[in-house]
Image (cartoon, rainbow, N blue to C red; front, side):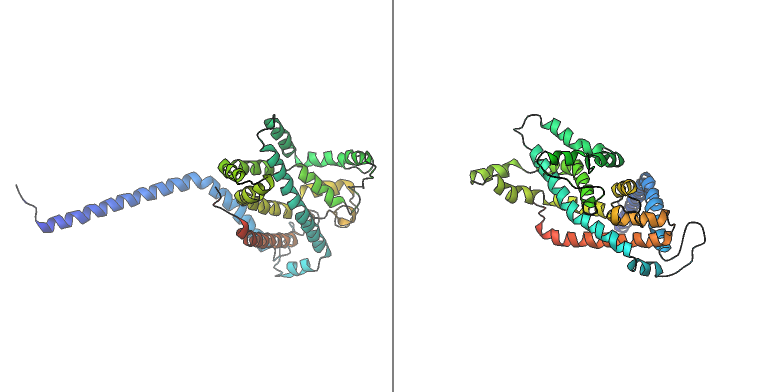
Length: 326
């Protein structure tokens, strides 16, 4: 048998290994190209409908663009005008009020409903789940029209109910002291989405933890604060952050209520501008007064506020969130 020289063997092995590496590299490139190809509809949509609009909004915030004439660069003038606009301050205060009151109330109500629906000894639980979730399926505008009847100051359902106990209900939709509260009541009524998320989190808590707590003599209240809350703390954090972001973008309910109840306010925010939320004022600046550059500056400012608020909430809530409770 003919023997292959040692030098020739050493040259052949590196050549084969290089060919294998080159083939695997080509295969990875082909797989990456196929992945990008399949993801290209989302990538194109993200670029066209998210990145480009955000970039244009940032650019227009430094101009006096009004949709009809050529925009001129005016630098920081729009931002300076925002800080001198009393209606911006009013809209921010209304938005903060709805956020500080509406977020805790909505989350507490959703969690309470989830705790009730998580009971296994109550018959007909699937029916109750459907009933409690149904308000979420009602369109927002339809909900507004419904609650205009429920919250009517003269013959509304809520004031009629309070009358049975000798209480005189306020004019929810026309009294500036109660208009924002009426919106919060309507939003709390439609807390079905949060309820379902909390219910899924509650179902993921191991039953063995509750069994061990019962053996140690822990009651339902102790189990809730020592087992349930730590176990679902990541879900609570997620729900609170998403609810805060949603409340900062509050628009549809305030637009419908303020358009029907009272349009005499200067900024169109209902009685005494009590329903003038930030996004509603941004919309009126952009599409009623056609100050698109000013509205773009307001949108950029809102994005900054949301990012800072989310970062603050994440920072202070991380210590209370437990990710290893299983």
